[in-house]
Amino acid sequence: MIAPKIIKRKYPSGFEAEILLRPHFKQHFFGIIIDFGSSDPQKLAGSAHFLEHKLFAKKEGDLSQAFEKLGADVNAFTSFNETMFYCSGVDQMPKLLELLFRLVGEPYFTKQNVANEQPIIQQELAMYQDEPNWAINNALMTEMFGNSNLGIDVAGTAKSIKAINAQSLLAVYRENYLPSKMHFIACGDFSAYQQKNILQIVGKLQKKYFTNDGQVKLDHKQEKGQLRDLTLPSQGQSNVFGVGIRLKNFKKVLASLDLAQILLEIMLESKLSVMSPWFARMKERQLLSNPLQISVNYTRQGNFVTIFGTSSKSEEVIDAIKAEVQHSLKTDDLAFAKRFLALQKKEWLAQNARSLNNLSYLAVETAEESLDGEDSFANFNKLQTMGFEQYVDYCDDLMRGAEICSARLSRKEEDEA
Picture 1 (cartoon, one colour):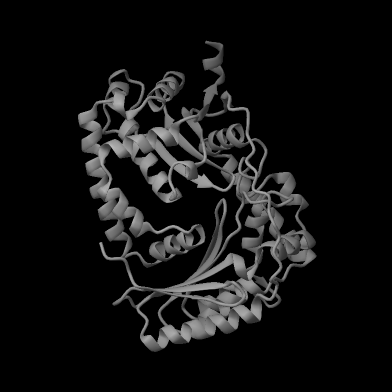
Picture 2 (cartoon, helix red, strand yellow; picture 1 turned 120 degrees about the horizontal axis):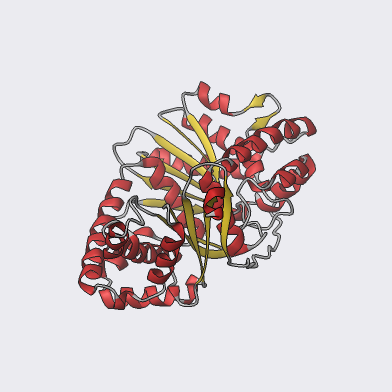
């Protein structure tokens, strides 16, 4: 598969920009990604997420309305190690770029507008906490990573949200929204003149808005929870359960964190998906009827797997999952495991092809890769040429020393039975 053409530029400030060319697309995507997220060092948990919300506030009001007047969409997200602001539109390119850089580069935090935002984020957090899946996920993250920022919800806690003020937000902003920690991306069909123009405009705007070039050394220590098996009281009828797997440092096995993530996802799907012999056994024993949700994640503060499902006999299923993930693929049905790897290689080929036609997905993925020093197309080629034995050896090394915890919901009548 041929990778899209990318033009890159690094400015003296350390700010980086790239233009990802996708011919025949009318839509243009622009984004700024910051190398700072919810699990990175911050005195008050949730500050990164709060910043994402409050940067839309300007003296004249919510800046998203200015994007709407240009017929453009604007949004943002906060992940464990990144925050991204992005917009898309068909025309008005210089105005969109100016608005995007003003959005990220002109903080306007006041006592009143921060106070107004607190109940909104509190309500957002409370809404999540009403979901059974949130309770399970929160328990797993705390068991794996303790009360660190990674172990706490992206939005923070009710207590930390209440403690955030204009001064603390500005301090976090100045420490982390630095030119050397920012990356701009444009994606779409741009002529040679437009490409040159974008890079010139970006050069002027990054110089105008991001003058703080100080660098704060952050301590990305990895904290550890108790890794227990928890039973949580349930007020409803939910049978949700989860398994958390705390993993060792991916870099000791593979240079690419993305490739490590891909291989583990394939391996776990091979063992636990609805296509696996294991799932057939679980279904036959009436322990599972719906697919499990499997996610592999890597962060600066630790790597982990979460597995979620529903079962009226969740204790038995959790024990079965633990047993299945802790033994090597070499002891599984080798014929199935080999067929599954071949099938997943084809699926990744199709997924990469589909991503080329999804402008926003492609741009966000590319921006994240740029921060992490990853290359999805190089990883794709490595996966396609990787033999089964090498794949199994990598997975064994990645899982070696893994620590497992679990959480399940239990109704009162079950506990009394």
